[in-house]
Amino acid sequence: MWARNRFGDGTYSYTRHRSSGKLSLIIWIWEDKSCRNPMKHILKIFTLLSAISAFWIGLLQASIFPRSYTFLLPIYLIVLLGCYGLLMVGIGLMQFPTCPQEATLLQQDIAEAKDFLKGKGVDRRRYLLLHAPPFLRETLFNNLISLSFND
Amino acid sequence: MEEREMERNKYSIIVPTYNERLNIPLVVYLIFKNLRDFDFEVIVVDDGSPDGTQDIVKQLQQVYGEDRILLRARPKKLGLGTAYLHGLKHASGNFVFIMDADLSHHPKYLPSFIKKQKETGASIVTGTRYVKGGGVHGWNLMRKLTSRGANVLAQTLLWPRASDLTGSFRLYRKSVLEDLINSCVSKGYVFQMEMIVRASRKGYHIEEVPITFVDRVYGSSKLGGSEIVEYLKGLVYLLFTT
Image (cartoon, rainbow over all chains, first blue to last red; front, side, top):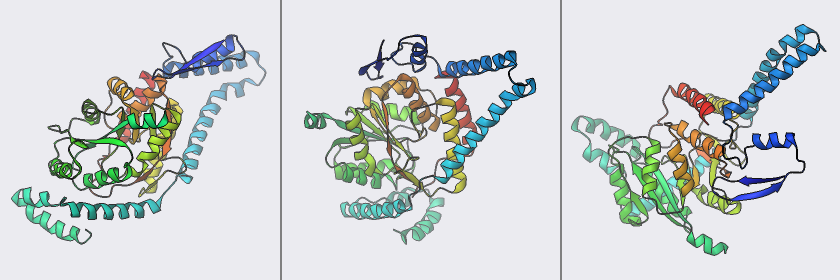
């Protein structure tokens, strides 16, 4: 069976499915490639939860494991999911890429930009003082004096 | 064939601004410095800033030319989505960049977006801060924690094909952007999330490029306090409607 992977912008490519049959059809619909009406995401989650529930009920019926354990299985799964989430957050936090050197590079770029703009006569601060209402002018003037030491 | 395609591509850079008088000239200078070999235009969509942002953009137009910098102002704050839409109407390129004007998105990454798009033929190229080669600076532990937690939650619930959902440094094909904006209804940064999730559902080819994000240099950040509630509401909305 051939699958047409259609990208939303009109381009598409063909891939060949190795096996035909119900399972590959299910996976194909799940991946919603080349479907005109792809399954809404909440439906996918619902399907997944239904499959897990069916499995759980099957386990209860089959009585392979003691009943008390099987009843608590959903709780275990939820706790597992929570732990997985916390683990991902923790790992992500530890591996969070930081770039302190970028701040210095940025300051260099800003200095370069300011010089260029001064040369071309573009004044970034002039408007604030000239067009501020009178009651604001004094505070702005004081702030600008302190700011201009860094400029 | 490659060179001919390069000559035909024009990039429109939409920069929504509000009270960015101090930052916008620096951003424009850096854009022009880094995109020397490409055909582009900068569209500044200003929402009626009271601090004179439009004034400074007019000064920049004198320096760089009115065909390279377009000032398309609006009377008051009308929202990010409509700002992009407004910018799109005046965009003459076939590719559209969106970026912030507060220097947290450094224009030096613009060529890497273009390169990635050419290599893969993608419709959307997103900048991501969470992969190696990217990164942040100026974030304290609390902010990193909320950002990471929000990201993990969104990944678990929504299964998007992107690692950074709330980032707003992106390159879109113009037709793709039009299609997405018309189907998104959220406000604020949830809007950015909705765009990438809807793009992922519609099957658009999305690629990622690492970018660095240095926190605001001048001016005040526009993030408020009720952002978490808004974010969760946005997640639930996206879960049920995409």
